[in-house]
Length: 310
Image 1 (cartoon, rainbow, N blue to C red):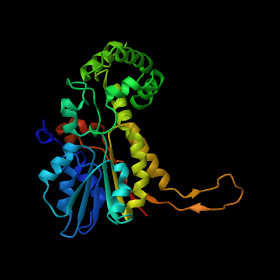
Image 2 (cartoon, one colour; image 1 turned 90 degrees about the vertical axis):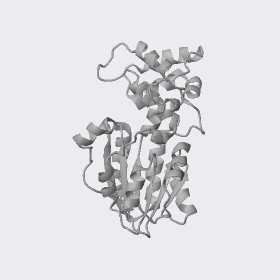
Image 3 (cartoon, one colour; image 1 turned 120 degrees about the vertical axis):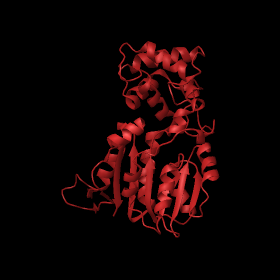
Image 4 (tube, rainbow, N blue to C red; image 1 turned 60 degrees about the vertical axis):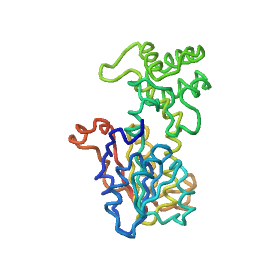
C-alpha cells in the first residue's frame, strides 16, 4: 500500500513553523519530509526567492515528494538527516541555513503500513527500518544480538521493567526460528510480562526499544544536533519535535549545553580559555493542545524545543 493512502497529521505544525521564524527569502531544511505536511506549510510562508530542502530516508516518502510537490523552490534529498553537513556542503550552504526542522520518530504512514513492521497491533514482517533498503531488519538484528545486549537495549531504550525476562524469551524463540512477524513478537512479550498495564500494550516498550536500536535513532539525533551548529547561519533557528523522553532529553541537554559559557579547563586555578555560547534557547518547551491531541492521539507525547544560533 502506498504512503499516500494513509492519513497523516503534522504534529505541532503552526508552533514548529513559528519557531523557525521564517524569512520569505530564507533557505530552510525539513529534516524528515514524511508526507510533506511541514514542508508544504514552510513553502506557503516562503516568497519566490525562498528555498526548502527536505530530507527523508524512506523511499516511499521520496517517491511521494517527487510525485506530489512540483515547486521550483523545493528539493528532496534521499538519505539520513545525520548527513546534513554533506548535503549542505554539496550545495555550498554550510553556515547559510536559516532554519532546520527535525520531526523525530515514526510517521503515521510508516506506523499504519503493516508491511513496515513498526506496529504491534498489525500483522507484518518484523522489519522496523526507517529505510527498508539499508541495514538489518528487526528480525535479523534480534537473531544477531546477544541476550545481555538485548536486555540493556530494552532497559535503556524502552525503560522496560522486565527487560531480563523478555530478552531471554526473545532469544529462545529467535533461536528456534519462531520469531518472524510483529504479532509473534507482541504475543511473546505479552506472555513474558508478569504484570500488564491496563492502559498500555505490554509490547509498547519492547517495540520502541528495538526500533531505536535498529535505526540508531539516538546516535543519529546526537549527530544531527552537532551538525546543525555547522549548517545554521547566525540567527538561524532549530526546531526539534520529539516523541519520547529519551529523544527529548538529548535535545534538552544539547540546547542547554550549547547555551552556556564553557570553561575549557575547569580544573585549572586560572581561567585559560572560555568558549562563548553557540545557541540561545527560545521560549519554553511547547506541548500539543487538547484539541490537537483529540484530532491526532499520536501527538500526545510530542514536545517541541526551539533554539537560535548566536
